[in-house]
Image 1 (tube, helix red, strand yellow):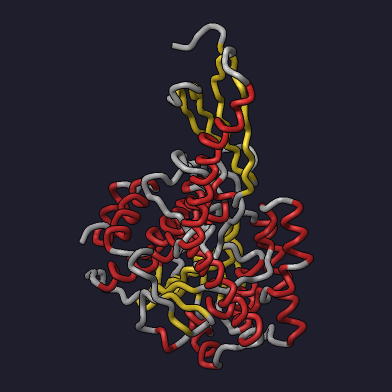
Image 2 (tube, rainbow, N blue to C red; image 1 turned 45 degrees about the vertical axis):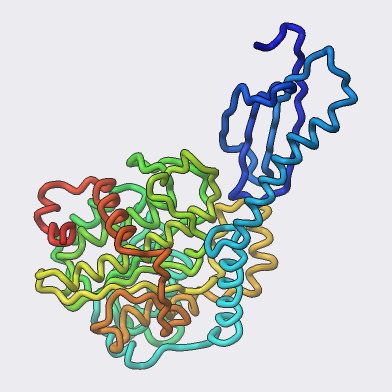
Length: 433
């Protein structure tokens, strides 16, 4: 029991920390017994600092000169625990604090920037693209726009799928103008624009239904669209985290719905990222209810989901009796100077444009990997790969992707997108093995 003459001493300790670890901890502890009376945790409103608050019960009949010893016994131990956790995170192979993850991405960017910045793909890719029909999501800007430009220049019929149809039309007009200036407009393919909001399952279903009603036969589907840096929020369909909803679930449903609208020898290209090494994927806590949220870590987790989906779909298609020889491959475009920083805040966006952009590669160079996977004759029968530096294949570790994780993500995704009985009948062979 607390005595009526007890007073509360509030001591706040601010420990500089990486955003992924931000947390507020409030405890009530009796001085004499050291017993925790209450405890609660919640996400901090500002992600730049770890706020560790201890509410200490201090009886009035004790001398106030004893407080330094008390703090050294109680609070310093807490700070040491936090710093120990940070050190453990630094040495971890994955995560937003991982030195290994940062070094992996930095080394890749060094190679991208200084060795393949001006690399081109072979002429056989252009020959293979001529006359093909390709749908590219998020092709109104950045890597997707350059992918559409390159494919159209090769003679492919490109369908630009983006959230704003008016922005898509502007992008298509700019691509046509650029091809005309180069003198390749006479051999260039057609450019169409369709509306697609990957954050809305209704929009995904509407597009798939429209394409099939028009008897559109796709030779390639490039899953390029993605978001980065959005705050923790729920999608229109109740999915508790937007990176997972847009980058993974929207493409998951779109791919399944369009499987029977694809050429039997068609290709699916998943634009993933080496940033998956920053992941902290927890399929039991997609909505970050039991852990602190950091958008870049959530982005890394969504990119890992892309890679798991790529490998799982390739395996299921190769073992099915659907009569199709579809191939599925993923690509890391590199660290590319695009509009991806628009959701990261004014200061970070300014730093990105003023400083970081000078070491990033161009959207055109970033698009080479997608075009290569969609058109290269060398990949006509290869499926399930993850390519970086355009042609090199990267292997995922068993800790990142294993059969148990693959099946859990697949079944969870199928449930979240709400597959109907008719849809289950059409591609049920993919949902069961």
